[in-house]
Length: 220
Ligand code: SAM
Image 1 (cartoon, rainbow, N blue to C red):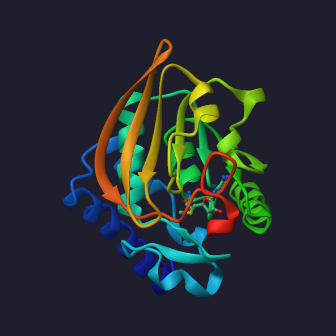
Image 2: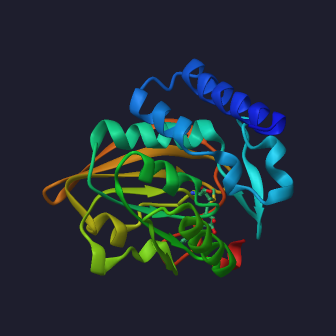
């Protein structure tokens, strides 16, 4: 192993330890973060910061989320839905989808920016990951593949996207940041028959969920 690779491997282990120190306690989640190499989801010339606990630009005004945020959302999912079929809205860099894949979920992901969608398709193929991608407005969900045991929305929504909620399986959970453009509360909606149980957790700041049941293009 080259010196630079040794340094990267060390920073990767330190990132996972940082997540543990920040309160991410589920060993399945920590193992998935140790398995997936975050630098592969960055542009080649921007990998130096890949194992810092930060959100970074991936172009087109979008970001790869902070590892802590990804770990927090993943923990909320794993605790409620330990296996099954999961839909992610907002493929972005592909990192969250790869973490879900490492946990053994069957992963479907939708991205509305065509360049990011195409980049993720190529990357998943190069890494040999069996993640199914779609280009389009994720707020409409993926009717042909529904129902989903879990739905993870990785952009901030102004309200509950009803079409997506209808695509949850019985006892399925949707993890979604809900709020205004600046700040959102991490929210879990769990389907119980025709009702949805709502749990609210800590605040985060995401890029906007843009689409028919999200923010409208004209706002951003
Ligand atoms: N999960 C991503 C990752 O691991 O890199 C996080 C990406 S970023 C925080 C949110 C992504 O959601 C952006 O790529 C953005 O284009 C996408 N997005 C926003 N609204 C969307 C929508 N209605 N449908 C699909 N993707 C959307």
